[in-house]
Amino acid sequence: MQEHPQDAEQRFSVFYRAHHGAVQAYATRRSPDTETASEVVAETFTVAWRRLDRALAGGRPWLFRTARHSLANALRAERRQRRTAARVAGQRPTASGSVEEQDTGPPVRAALASLRERDREVLMLAYWEDLDTAGLAAALGCTTGTAAVRLHRARRRLRDALDERVPRTTTVPTPDPNEKEATR
Image (cartoon, rainbow, N blue to C red; front, side, top):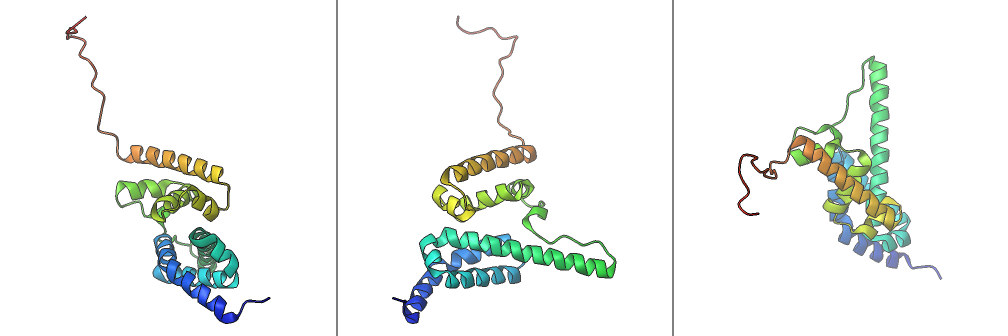
């Protein structure tokens, strides 16, 4: 028995209202401009409409994964267009204002920008999008164990990148060799 179109519209409408803000925030944080972010959100929910049962079953992690793919496609298309325009004009293509190039901000943003895209994505999904390990796995398309390992490694790399930018100021006091021990 086929679902009535109004039932599907109703389910989609509820789903859209529940998750639109989270997908919009996700796309806005990762896109070079608001136009690209809006296109990513529209494409994400278009795919969700076409695959409504999968979208409803996958929830927010499924939407983030779909948005990630949509953004990657949009950025690839933008790079192709810049290269083509530069070739026609006889110039070298210029980079967009993506997170990778914005290392002039606070130390955390600079450290995050210095990471590989894979590490940045897992950290942003975990902390900015507030996904647990199961949600990370669904959004990244991997097992829960793999997601946990990727998050652990990304955290370590971020800590190392932060240590390079902001050396730790706390030190362990070393005993003065000229002082005698008080008790023995």
